[in-house]
Image 1 (cartoon, rainbow, N blue to C red):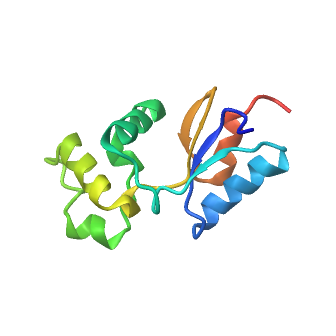
Image 2 (image 1 turned 120 degrees about the vertical axis):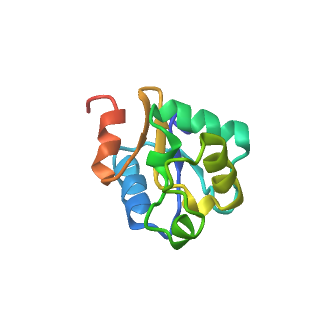
Length: 120
């Protein structure tokens, strides 16, 4: 059972592991999407961005070397160009992003996931 929770997860990321641990400590079994090994398609990525309620630019890893190489910080870049970049290079998407029936958030710091959970 996945409790209606999905985590877009990178097991090599300490923040992502911490969010997963917080969920598991609450006996929640999220659906885990390792988006680096199973990249999202355009529609799924766009839906995820829309669910968070923030522009894609705010979900990107701006400290990633590829971000600089592709000049993704340039404000002239369009949302479509950013989507194309993430589709080609999923590492650009920050993590973890968690989706629950209460909403969707980039959970950095990890404790942000608690905003998406019902009171204990």
